[in-house]
Amino acid sequence: MISRQAALLTATKGLALAGCDDDDTAPRVTTFTVTVQDVSTPGLLATDRAGGTVPLSPGAYAVFTGSNPLFASGSAADEGTELVAEDGFPETKDAMLDAAANVSQHGIFESPGGPDAGPAIFAGETATFTVDASPGDRLQFESMFVQSNDWFFAFSDGGIDLFEGDTPISGDVTDRLALYDAGTEEDTAPGTGADQKPVQDPAATNVGAPDDDTAIRLASTSEFAIPATAAVIRVTVTPNQ
Ligand SMILES: [Ca+2]
Ligand SMILES: [Ca+2]
Image 1: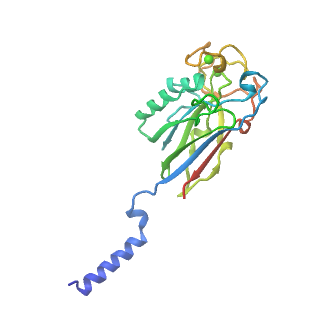
Image 2: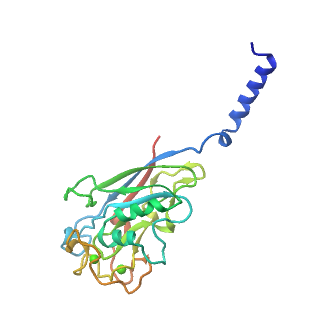
């Protein structure tokens, strides 16, 4: 039989626990659905290739804390980023993320099929993936701007915070994207030249002259006419309820 004093202690402890959930429970995990849509339209680029649309490659993504585990703006690209940016192959980057200590989750996103029955994300297609994250976690990815030599989309500032304080972010995050030049292949204008992916052997890698500038940087809008990011790609992040 429980004593009155023990019952009182139990009740008091219960109240105390109810008042400090944050200290006594594991971090809250939120599952997010991320969509990457190709919103480019025919004739967006002045080229016959892909009807002037801008296909996107399958991408590599990571949930992480601290610094961007996929690339560093201003530094040379690693092999994984080069393969995404020049040839649209994310598998090597995905495998390299296994070794990144600050990555909690990583993977590949791709088209559900589409006109090539393959992983490339063509105009009108949407790739979808889910990630589990806790406050403090960030998201980053790389996906090739296929009508280029070595350009890829990623979030600027190293990634996006998936929470504002403890609140999951929600909605269109396209304005957080930037188009980067990987610094691994010399550029020609979008949709032109002999060394861009649409006119290469689809399975070939590293076709084209090396870049004069080996630093990862923003693609040059002073040198080339480049469509607005929002005319090519739309990314949304939605916490599951
Ligand atoms: Ca380049
Ligand atoms: Ca090339």
